[in-house]
Length: 301
Image (tube, rainbow, N blue to C red; front, side, top):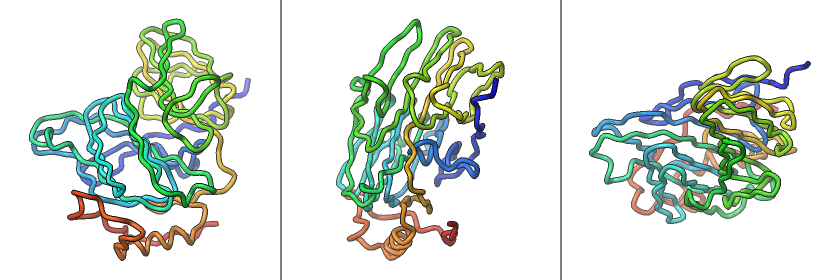
């Protein structure tokens, strides 16, 4: 029987300022999975009283960001005036559209204490018709996210839609972001609920696929979402990311994503010039910013 595993992406270390993350997407052989453009695994990290997460104001265009924490807390502020703390099990969903600036920092009440931080940060592309939309922000409480159980398997639909279940996260294209937890070994055949492209990330434990065992720090990309079946090995927590890919290619430069390279170039110029009409300042967090990286956008067709 032909394997349904198309690619295995190893988690690679990346620096996001004063904090190291494990980067899963983009990857040179697989830039996207469905509309998912970028996935960072933050931690798990124990930060001492003198260590804090501080990602200063930085811009985005042409995408939605999704932050989901397993442990710890992050204070989100943006140029729309939102100032929201995210805690484990909650979702921060920001659609950047034509342009937004935000910062991510350790909340003030934790800055002089030992603390943990662990979670996922994700970018999801926007349909071409919405790339220049007005920015928006939503915070979804953990009790509002759909959860259900089937034969000792716990499911949570963090974002998107499968069959007759829909998350309240206001996504802009057909996608799904699913958490699956088992306390004992289980056989899971979920392919009939999925569509488009799909990838699996094992946070804890192991899975058995086609006779081979896979563990953490890997993104396993399937060839066919409809054939997504596997076994968990004891206590396991994993995530499925996927959905319908876009017809048009998305170009990426730093924090900018767009189907039109000219728009990326304009965004670069606006941020470099600190054009506040294109990228407004963040209320109560406007004393610093992340400068534009000094490297050229590659002219790949």
